[in-house]
Image 1 (tube, helix red, strand yellow):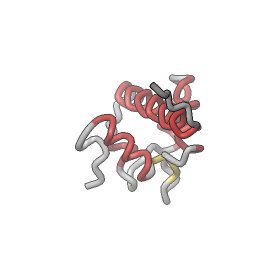
Image 2: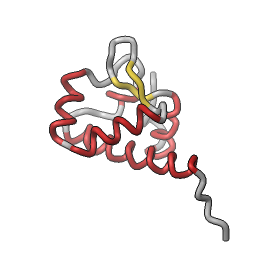
Image 3: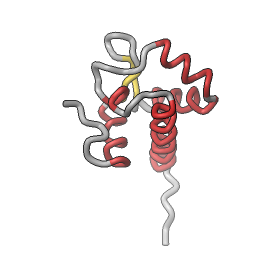
Image 4: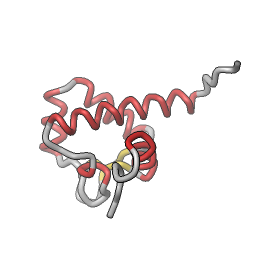
Length: 101
């Protein structure tokens, strides 16, 4: 049996861990997945600051998501998932988790 140890595999695993942590932290702070998965919504500066204050893990996950291009700032300066982030979220949580309708 061959184990895939490629950098891409590690990056995807790291992204999935961050998306999972992100989902739990969003829920704990009264948000839903659509807050970050719908391109015209997103997390504003105040929401991001509150998440940063409440969890050391959030800042790391946000950095990983942005550096991997799974998250970005939309035209309003809010943090949202990119197509890549939405696809991974959909893959992890099933239909409806990353709907953009």
